Length: 453
Image (cartoon, rainbow, N blue to C red; front, side, top):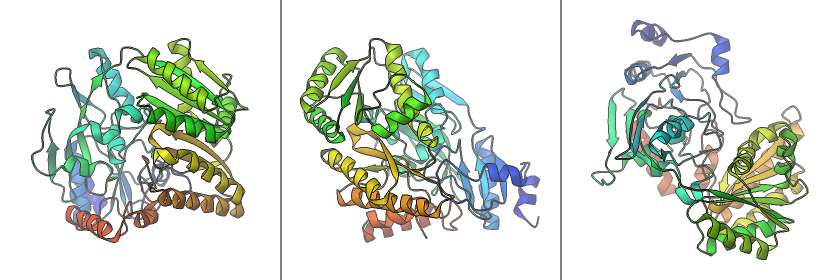
């Protein structure tokens, strides 16, 4: 066997080399991250096929880029030159749901929403809910440590991953973690793989924590004439001790785009809309939130009259990215700042938009201080592209200056790799590189993502 394609074929796999297929699989949803030219695509259907692919890649020194639904927004699943694209989406089986231990075991290609659908039969759900929950995979969610709209109360993906099966760079298969509610034996390798974006190992099975479905959920929408007032309302809500299950901010740019995409009577003249959900003592919680919003300057507060209206509001929020796509190419930023500086960060994004002459809409997981400034650029216009990139960088610089982070939930990928080096101190960065070298001494697992070697 003289080449990796022949070796994979000899091993019983069917590598795809058609240029059109490779081009279609070369990118994720990250705007303006140019892909490399892949060598082949392997569609894995089992852990053994993943391990075989990695062993062949190690033998020939070929990079491996793991992929799922490719809904990521940082270029983590983007092809690099000469790589084997390893498509894990065919591994889409839910192995088991255990209502006693409240956990699900599933393969990496299972869609996020499918886990909750399967668990619902037992009155349970999988709590992490990224905006792409209906189309993104569990493997990708774990690899990017995905967040979502309910993180303000229920937390992010890593808090719900109990155990993993992982194929290492050698092709060996390792299990880490546990099935028990408690367990602190040894180093927490599960957390290490969460957010590693396929650079340390390839996830082939996950054991996930489930939670009871809340008995009742109520939704409130508060309209504000300024983003500063909306930001103040968020800080007041969080300081009050309230624990909303969702606290989202939608700015005017997004309100207009969403209404144009799917008319539903959104207040398109408002500077910002806050969506708030409560699911513990929802009547009392939302009454308190309503008072706080009014005190912060809300011009109108409206409670959803039924579940259908509430779901429509939340579904509209999930469509924010697609609504902005109608305006041009979206360069998606994803920063998190201390909650106490949310209003200041909103003003900073607006100032960057004005300074560089670009359209920027902000959608935010406000209760987490996690902002998504969506920057509209027109790649065919070099001036537009340069202005968008300049605004993108300025927002990242602002977040770091506020004691925040360059990514709250989308990950680093290729898009923010250079910025990670600015966020980490030199000792931290060196330690992370040693971890990468220990797990992947040949540097074949998703090379160039997260860290430069």
